[in-house]
Length: 373
Image (cartoon, rainbow, N blue to C red; front, top):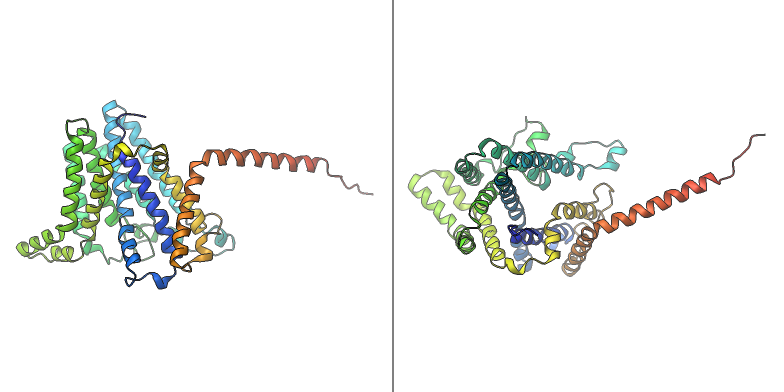
């Protein structure tokens, strides 16, 4: 493995994908009567679960710009840009395909619900946007970092403006990226803000990671920056409001979940970076490098993508708490095992499908033919 690999990011991705697996399982299958703030365990679980998507989007931005700047140092950044655009497009296609109701379409029931946007489409668009920004400003690193920082701050600080935005005249295929009026799970705003902040971190890591004491400074910055955003960012916006009397800052201070979530992301980065030397286990790296496969497999098993038969169909909002917890553990294990042994499973299926096909052909060849009299 390469020495300049950011192992802690693989561990964070592995952690985030496991959080996503149990989060989707419990959210989808736990009985609605237990999804209440009256239950302390659910409240704590729900709070932790809220950090999963911010982690994914921030890591996305960090990895993209880190790899782009790394490729730049080797002189093959144009190849990396092309690869990034293809990657973004493939994520878009996979994201849409997972929501296509194949059996409903075959039955003649066609609607536009498959156009709602989920995490893969937003990551795909973000990959394309970041590669575009880099292509335009690759020779002006400071300007690129400033632009991405400005985008992140603007997206987060203007959240009250687009929070309840509706655009009824805009076609669904476009409006679903901007608003949730048609049922989109994720939208470009505010989630691209996390990607932008992550991209700035990617630039910083690629430029300074070999400097003396960088790791110590980075960990301290993650911890103290995370604590500030988590504990004091709301007060900071309230002070800005008191000085400027701009109501937007007051609204941000009163519903400041984005900067707080970013603070939580930084805290997780700080902890995992500090423990990086203990997180290089092959299993952790395997999970961290196969998050897309894990996502697709979990979507098929849980929501019935492509097959129409998933756990969600048969046990939606029906499980008791302990059943949900044990089921989530089993679900996580099965999905991860499928991905870990993906190559062996594919080889097994290929061999047996060929054997079955050969058997069918052999039987058809020896089937007695009917002769007309």
